[in-house]
Length: 267
Image 1: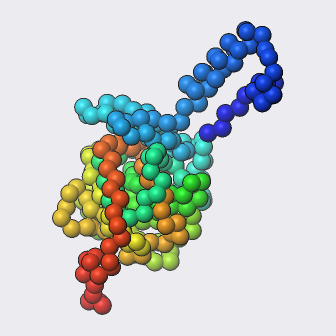
Image 2 (image 1 turned 120 degrees about the horizontal axis):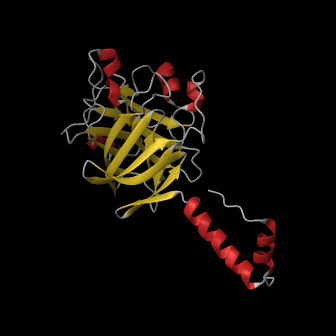
């Protein structure tokens, strides 16, 4: 977030020039107002989140204090005719104080509602996480859900409930063309209900667990990003009102690949 001061005040601050008392009072009020109206961070319990191209607030929802965020379409406009360039962008709430997540567990409780009226007919409740986000938001990994299709009576649509992508070169449309089905999958989730998502990141792999299930329901066997470590974020996309609580992050040491799951040659 950039803050702008009148040029004469910038000069005074840099040169140490003296001002009449009333100008110091005006400067105090100006700085105070910028702090209030230009605030881009929100605090939920002991965690602080910085808003990146989303609007947000802390509120009580279903008896719990939560972080509510929605994509800011003024910050990053949406273009129906150019989906690849205008979705899966850095619109998220960044967890402050953790910038070196490499391997470990990310767990979050989240609930997705659809905006009404819908800004786009194809909204599906897009909600999830970012990880290994670099400092300037130009590279990160993501796993997110489309809860609207999690339990529909169409297996093809169910198979698109979960999405992995790597920003900026492997977004959903690119992956759907280059490797159909490999980076998407089903999950028994729905709109308007709490979902517990847990992602285990280990080296170049990631596994997703839903609602405390014993086994993972989605696996990325090779992450496509080049950024080895970074920040954690909570993500929504167009048309989603996202509610988040109880974020838990545990860093771990890299596990040997032979300890992960079962490997088969084919069926």
